[in-house]
Image 1 (tube, protein in one colour):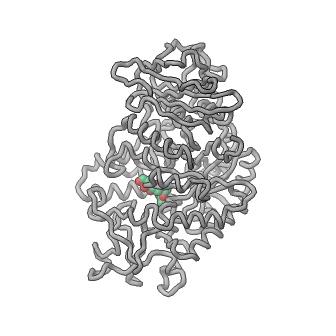
Image 2 (cartoon, rainbow, N blue to C red):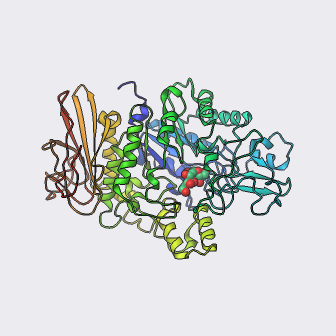
Image 3 (tube, rainbow, N blue to C red):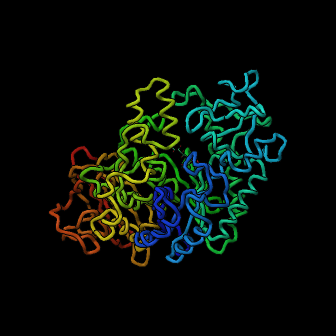
Length: 585
Ligand code: ISL
């Protein structure tokens, strides 16, 4: 598969600059801090760095409210620092992806300042300005042009008394939505993107890019949404902006205007809440030339009910059903991105692993299962160290606008503050953002990089396996044991000059020993495990003896086995011997 795009065998590392590394001791991370640690990234072996926003910003939504797309916030450094970072990364063969946040700007962006200051300005139409609902008193509850709820609580419209109109903000009121219907808006965005590409940037992660096309009626009206228990008294406006009518047209245009004809293929990933498998196929079909891959949200909602604050138990079979559908849906056309974590999610080892005595085993098991799927894996800073959620005490320790707004609204409507706090601790975005976890003497890079049994060393082996075993990047995928709530199991298969190569991946999602009799795989080579193998060694030759049992998975154990089959022989079967567990296909 030599003609496959390079990013199919790549691993991306996300840096959240505010909390990655602080070079000047002001308590906030910066570009110099990243430059100083490029060797950490090179040692890990990642191919791409995705940098969360570093642009000038009032920081109302931690930098996702941008007031100038073409500069760097002095908190983080300067354009010269960006140039130095690009050179440092490129010098080690690592590419740089920037965050592109163009569904909305900051209300302090000069475009919006001009748009707001004068209804006759030619920037007025760059945003969604609408009159109050007919017959309603402007500025009063219910007078908003639609009933849409914002992602950060409250109405998605802000009243501007000076002009008597409202502007749309799907997120914070300091994040007005850009009007992509206006061709000048699109041209300005593409021009800005070309500027970054000319600087040496290798691609973009595109913030909520499936929201850029809104459903606009002939009279300019946007449609009301259905009022649900989770949105009441507002409506869920998502049918009016998720994967709207012109989104494919806009992304194809962006591709033509920014990426077509570049010497080196860029990497583009669209963040897409609410995207379906069928839509993702269209967005990532190479023949359509829109995006390389999308971030979908199905799996990170599996332990949530009506809203993200409605925390529910996690069931492994739900995860298999979800990932299995995405793997199958994008098998022939398109491509998956694979992630557990980012700056919006709680830490995976605390969420679906065991961040107590099995922290190392469960973090490495989760990593193994994710990285062995078909798709491009994303590692969020600290995930490679098995970092935990923050042990938050009171609401005073939270900084994120989403958490703070939700707390204020929920408590005001009578919810028990302790119950609201419990949800914030489980799902709040600050878990992965706030700088220093008190467990840092135990969980840190310095103690892990030279330890072969560390989470870091395991991520390193996983990334290296993707680079050296083409079955990981290119093989097809078959889910096994869909109904088993303890063991995650699947195979990957690929043909090359070795013949037919098959990998079996097993992950124990419990802290108990579970039986896993592997039919047809007896004696198969162990390519990678998160415990030392039977000889007492990790595959790289390090490790200490462990009294393991063949056919059983130890607590949170993960294993990757390999066999090379003569063409035409059947796939391997796995039959766990635990009563009640169905056999593999
Ligand atoms: O974090 C979320 C869970 O409630 C999402 O709603 C999130 O806001 C959504 O995935 C969009 O995220 C992106 O755009 C936001 C920004 O706050 C997030 O950090 C960013 O990843 C607005 O720019």
